[in-house]
Image 1 (cartoon, rainbow, N blue to C red):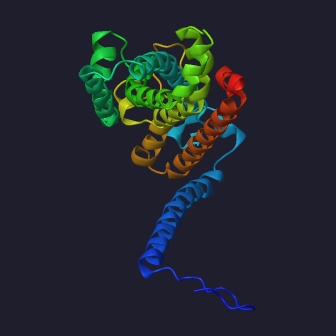
Image 2: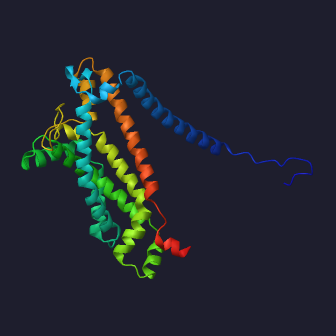
Image 3: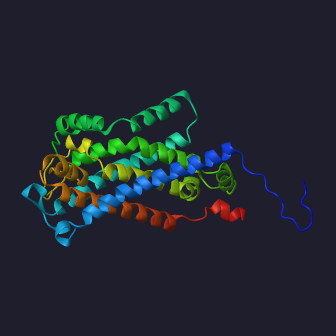
Length: 293
């Protein structure tokens, strides 16, 4: 019905199911955001009181009730470095192979297997890493054994994420590059990988987050030592194992556990921010799009 001159048009009111759905979506988003803010805020509020320069540069004393977390930070960085250096090249090669292989029954079965492995509890990877790396290969409880176990744990997830990012690159870009006479390797290096980089980096960052905060798998492989590691064969604990020990096994260690949790959250935020900046720096328009434009 048309409005008369000088009258405001009447808008149809949303039916009650639409309003109820909108309210449910808004309430769910508020619960999720509020819960995350509450958890992070509680860790920050309780942990800032114990945070100091000495906490970051000193070794633990009195079972972690005093001193700092310097050896734990070093062990965490070494474990993460071994995991990423071992997992990313293998994941990239496997993702390229899966993304551009014919969709055969074997390829589909391999994708399902990777999905299943990505959902396996981390303690299973810990038992596997203990049996293979610590016992069979003679690495014992060490940084190397823990890092390789973390690599096995994040490999399925990172591989599938990279594959999906590669498959999401539009076919038109590849065809345009091929029409210019570019080789398959050149198309992969100059067109597909740059276009898929944001999605691939998202998978790597999520893998870093899982490896960085892992506890169960490292209890069976990296050990429990709080000393500075002198090499890859030395035992060491990461931040999450140290937090677990303070909270569960050390009477009076809750304050230092919250401080360790604050450092853990802060480092994860820094890693995510750094990854986003790296993606922006490395992203560029593929040659095929430049030609089409």
